[in-house]
Length: 195
Ligand code: ZN
Image (cartoon, rainbow, N blue to C red):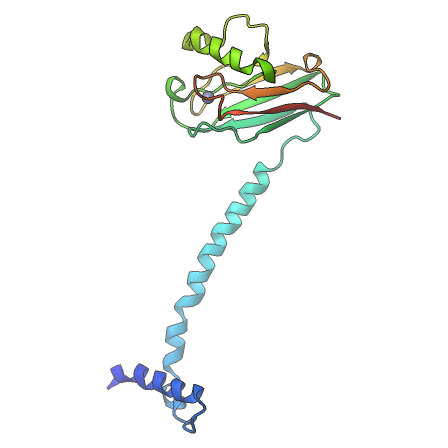
């Protein structure tokens, strides 16, 4: 007999919705309603907790040292930097960039560095770097076109490079990129001087 209660309840609702005269019928089956609605609150609260965690993580990541003479750039196993734009205040004599590799792949397979040069020199630098090989960090020894270059690192590693800001001419077009063979096409961005 109890199995038929939901059907009767549903049927009663249907009749009520249609404006029928049997409005008194739903009262008897009303106690069944609370047990159905109970699972709802807990199911809703879990996604909320996750989004709060994501929000706080985003706030932390979006707090670079704006206006200061240093910056951290992260890279990963997907051949990506986490920024496409490095802005260096003109007031800095030296600008320090910390490069992190948040991935887990070894340097030989997914190595990253951060090289700064005039945009017009990037292709020649990466071509000569590929020819120079892994032992030289995929950069030609003593390459005068390179304005700044960090060491090549693998997953879980971190390094830093200081940029002599005087080498960046106002109005010039500069890029930062990874000189590991095949990476610069994706791993690159703009370096600009700002007030
Ligand atoms: Zn790379």
